[in-house]
Length: 109
Image (tube, rainbow, N blue to C red; front, side, top):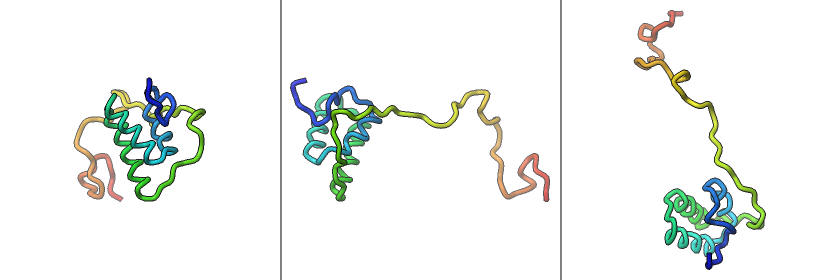
């Protein structure tokens, strides 16, 4: 790559890492990175992250301190349990809370 970008190895950064790394950029650096993204991959989620950060900067946020050279990679993590046929809810009408006669399997107090 002939162009010097404000984030080292930008093209190889996953979105989770990019979300953290753009916080250290000032507005001119962020605009340069956005321009590069629009001219190359033009990924909507990446551009949304950058636009949101530009809005934060416009609202008075300041770039986070620190070097971009040795920043650990952030992996995207999913939380919760995996859904599958064995864990899915039984098909049927949803329960109506608060109406004793219409909530199956519930005895009246």
